[in-house]
Length: 237
Image (cartoon, rainbow, N blue to C red; front, side, top):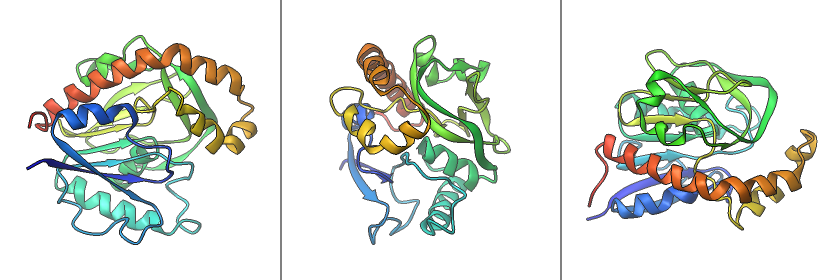
């Protein structure tokens, strides 16, 4: 029987991307649930072998505008309290921070584009070591306070908090190593057109950077995911 990964998706094109092959090789069947669907948060949050909370262009704190966010934080909170394997990416990482009692807030800057992260000692000893020295994709305007008991793993010059872990099986990444920067990257550029224009981002340069850095990032991200799955006790069939 295959293991199960439930991926909570907030926009269609922000999916598991280059993480999917490692999950398939580890014997996972993948189920996506999309924000706005009746079954988005249905069932027991402890049931999936792995929960992945994906990105999206909204703020964790926008409950009045997007009421489902409170229910999503509660869903996550139950999962995290039980210590069940959980991975958060960008908005997903911020939702995890909030569910763990951390503050999520606008950082005052749009960090969008390819740039390296600086790893802490804990980060360099973690699966994030595969990302050291190479650009990763950043795409956020919010950040978070490190939750109590969590290990700080990475930072950039613009944003001190970029990744944290809580034990071997809970990992939150504010950046996007999972992004498929091949031809499907155009969906990101179109889907986030208003945000990119508002932030004054040079879209042709971002597209060129995706071509230049994407293949190496995909290899590094695949190695990160495979090591993390093994660390979390999720590797193998």
